Image 1 (cartoon, helix red, strand yellow):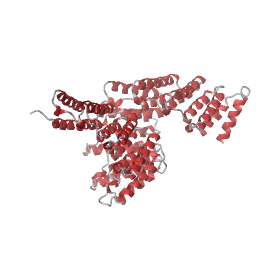
Image 2 (cartoon, helix red, strand yellow):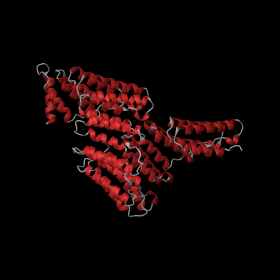
Image 3 (cartoon, one colour):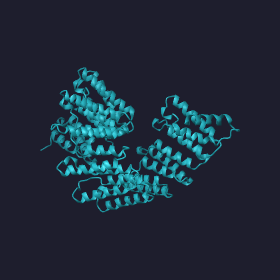
Image 4 (spheres, rainbow, N blue to C red):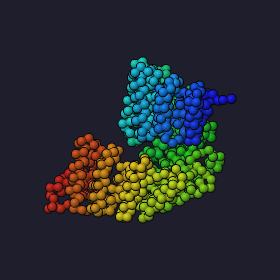
Amino acid sequence: AKPCKMCYFYVISLMARIPDQPSFDRTLELLAELWKMYYGGDKTMSPNYLVYNKIMAGLSMGHTNNATYTAQELLAKMWEKYEEENIDDLRPTLTTYNTLMNVWAKHGREKASRNALSLLDELWERTNNGDEEFHPTAITISTVIAALSNDNDRESMMTAERIFNDAKQRAQEGATLIQPNKIVYNSLIKLYSNQVGNSEVGKLASRLLDEMWAEYESGNDMMRPCTFTYSSVIRSWTASECPEAFDKAKELYHDIVKREQDKFSYSRIDSIICNSLLDCCSKSSAKDAPEYATAFLQKMWSEYENGNRRIRPDLVTYGNVINCWAQTKDPKAVEHSMALLSEIWERFEQGFTDWRALRFPYNSIMNVYSNSQDKEAPEKATALLREMQELYQQGNKNIKPNFITYNRVMQVWAKSQHPLAAKMTLDLLDEMNQKHANGDTSLKANSITYTTIIDTCSVNGKLEEVDKAAELLRTMWKKYEAGERTLKPSPATYICLMNAYGNLRLESTALKAEQLLREMWDTGDESLYPDNIVYNAVIEAWSKSKSTKAPPRVLALLDEMWSLYEKGFEDILPNVSTFRYAKETMLLGDPKDSPEQVQALKKMASGITS
């Protein structure tokens, strides 16, 4: 019997659930077959919006090439075919737009917010023109906010808050379908959790949590916060980097424990909540963080073994506890971390073989080595990398080193001040590049890789190593402009190279450091505009040069910083470090040659440092 259109729809629906490229390609082949039969005369086989929506849904789930652009093209084709063929059930729906926004949210990265906002504007335009079926709903708002989470900057956060508040206002005016629900609140709280370094996000997330409880207690059962809500609020406090973040995280944890007494509560302690708390602990300045985390891990095992299956520790748990030890100067931090690694293998042998990504705790131990005072730390970290490779070759696929592993080994070398540090990190980069060229996509070097190597080349003050660092910066730009977006240099990249030039203690290299400063401005990229840390690196390079040209150059840079600050570049405000370097530079000048400049610098430096 000839398959009907619904048969095709069901097969496409099943194929769309398989998250790989061949399955997605097959859905497009089936779509093409439907159109072929339609144009062959069988008008009953015309694809409809349900078919297209399912294919887009598959794009949001799977790992496919150019998912966002393919989904965008599918929407354009729907409108084109609808208008050309006058097929009513091919007309895109609100679900089509929501699904496309979801594709952008999950795969769009830096372009996600812009395209999601453009689609939202289109929906409002169609609604305002009388097409009410395109009126955005709470699902739409949630998806747009999720797309905005990709940007991780203050502007995106403010845009998300504006959309959220606009939805609340419209709901009060009668558009009840757009009333923010628990999903919308969770999306905004999750966005806050991505705003690392924003001191306000913890408070903002807690305020939304309080609103949700207020709504629930006033009778709206659908607004009851869930475990995901609490986890995201804890992670928002972690992102805030506030001194009180860990205390707030513990308060939230104990609040869930108290609310667990309500048997109907959706807020339950599970391993996700516990891991969020331990992650916050690992990033706090609490002196007892490693001891707290170690005791908490044992408490989790105790509850699990007493029947609470939701609180089973996993590799993320162990990684967070090890990261707590990495933050301490305890000379036994490595010993404690290796004991935890041994415990992981004991558990693995006891049957916890469903644990995935065994590399995670290994990567965390690299952090311990990075902060260790052990002079043999870089060799030990490299040996641990080789151990991971050997275990992987023996068949343990979950322990395969990835780019994070390599980056962290490089960071251990960078901090060691070992005379062979630059050579070792460059050798590791060559190893990564070779494996990546042979098909290992997990070992693609990124900007952190290159920045770490450039930092390593700055340590020993060797001209050939600094020249190699400068070459690496050019390589980053070349590859970035060729489409490798993860290799875009950051301000940290430039600062590391400026420090390398400064450590050479030459007038010529101080001038090169200043040229890098000009290059950052010339990019026209606001994310690369210098701040006071960048200017300080250049001023320090001049100070180290011992050149008689240093005082007038530093004075000019100080004047430039003040001028830019007064124009609104608040991050360029000179600080104590600025004037400490300036004061050191003062001693290099000859008052007889330039009395006005040198005396002005002396007055400025000594006055502000005091």
